[in-house]
Image (cartoon, rainbow, N blue to C red):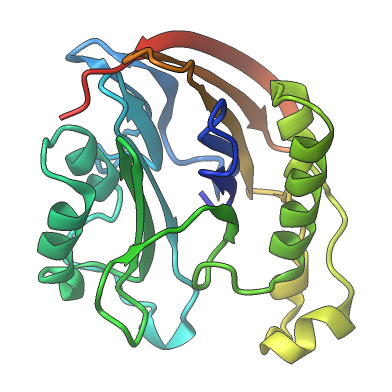
Length: 264
């Protein structure tokens, strides 16, 4: 997944709101997001090549998502698949901080990644490509994550944060509204990419929020929000995933609304 825009902790009725695109080669075998038959508490997509996932949630309220970190100097494949990290967290019961500290000790075993994990009233971020090897507890705010560090001002991230803020200031979250936060297919202007050190033709081709680059592109758009009510230990999760074929044509959509609670 190459773009995640999210609001965290700004509205007690909607503590987490997410709009995200997963970009990948269309030939890579994938199962769209569903509750897994062998893990019925787990809602996530599944990468059939390595068995992991890029984003998911479980019925206890644990949330995880990952993006690759763009670093041409570290292009080698890691010893372990990055997609196992969100899956491991979703199946675990440790606090986000404790679990991320164990991951930080294993950071060199993976190619570059950005990882979001949350449970209960906490959301944490960790990247193994940062100079700071400590997990970061996220305060309330609107954030953007692509294939650089959290809130790196790539044009697609800046645009997405602006759109998400406007949406949440004017209306409650909806799947169609959140989809528009990450749906722009226009590449960034070269003058907006050069200050970030992005110069190659491929950099501009991949600078759009929604990517259509032939064999590679946006495979899915996931929109999610958590909805809470005062004095209620359980709450509702609203999830939708759209799946796309080459050319950006929508081929499937799946929605889930389910209660979550009883957080470890």
